[in-house]
Image 1: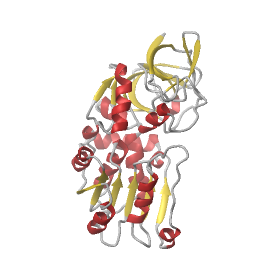
Image 2 (image 1 turned 180 degrees about the horizontal axis):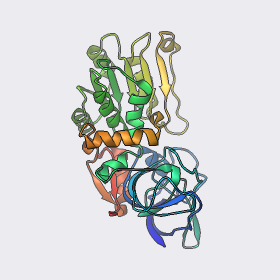
Image 3 (image 1 turned 120 degrees about the vertical axis):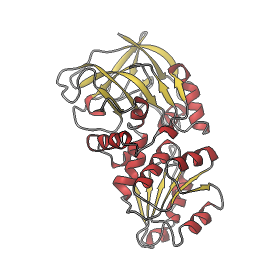
Amino acid sequence: MKTPAAILVETGKPLELVELEIPALKPGQVLVEIAYSGVCHTQVMEARGYRGKDPYLPHCLGHEGSGVVRDMGPGVGKVKPEDRVILSWIKGAGADVSGSVYRWRDRQVNAGGITTFSRYAVLSENRLTAIPGTVPMPEAALLGCAAPTGMGAVLNVAEPRPGQSLAVFGVGGVGLCAVAAAALCGCLPVIAVDLLPAKLEAARELGATHAVQAGQNALAEIRRLAPGGLDFAIEASGRPAVMQMALESVRPRGGTAVVIGNARHGEQVQIDPWQLNQGKRLLGTWGGDSQPDRDFPRYCTLIQAGRLLLRPLLDRRYLLEEINRALDDLESGATVRPLIEMGAA
C-alpha cells in the first residue's frame, strides 16, 4: 500500500511531494487515514534548518491532526477500526512505539511515533485519542498541538482564578488557544500582544478584552491596563526578547510568566536576576503539561457545548500539494494555523 506524502529531504529546501510505501504494522502501531493536519511553527523550524543539524533526513513531518483508524498492529486496545481520532505528538496511554521506516523508490524515509503530512500514516498507539462523532474533524486536528499547548499553559500551568490579569505574547495558533483558555477562566483583563492586526482581531474573537500592538510602547501599555503588573504572562512567540518582556510584565511577589514558544537553535534568553529577586516566577511547559486521555475529552466537551470556538484559527485551508505555500504563509504571518485537507471521511 502506498500513500502520498510531503517529506523533508534537505533543510532549507521545499518539502518534496512523493509516494511512500507503507511498512507492515508493528505491535502497538495503528494505520490512520488522515482527514486534516495542522501545520505548526515546529515544522517551519525543521524545514528551514532553524533547529540545527538534522540527523534523520529524509523524514516525514507533522505532529497534529485528525483522522480515522483503518488498521491496527498486534496488541492495540486503545482504539479500533473506524474510530475517529486526534493525532498528537503529546504521549498518552497505550504502547509507545518508536518510528517507522517508509520506502521511497530505493531510499528509506524515517518517521517518528507520529507524522501527519500524508494521506495515510503509521502511528504509535499512545499518540491517538478517540473522539465523539459530533466533534468536527477540522477543530479536532487542532486538539493535537495548538489547543493542548496553549490552553494547557493556562489551565494546567498558570491556573488563574477569575478576575486575575493575563496577557498572551504572540497570538498565533498556540497563543490564540491560550487566549481562549484565559477567557474561559474568567481572567480580566485578557490582553493579546502581537505585531499583526489580523491576529489581534482573531484574539478578540476568542475572548481577549484588549489588544496591544507589539513594539517599543507595548510594556507601558500593558502596565497601564494592569497597574502593578500582570498576574500571568504567557509567551508564545518563540522570541527570546519577548520571553524577557513577559517576565518584566508580571507583578512582583507572585507574578508568573510561562514560556511556550520555541526559540531557534543557539538563541538564549538574558534575564536580569532582579526580576526573580522580586518574587516573580518563570516557568516552562512541555505541551501545556497536557495529558491527552484526561484533557482531550474535556476540550471536545467544550467544543460540543459551544464554549470553545476554534473557528477563528481555521482561516485558511490547503491541499497537500500546497504544503510549501502553507509553510511560507505560516512563517510570514499570512495565516494563523494552516490546515492541510487530505480528503478522508
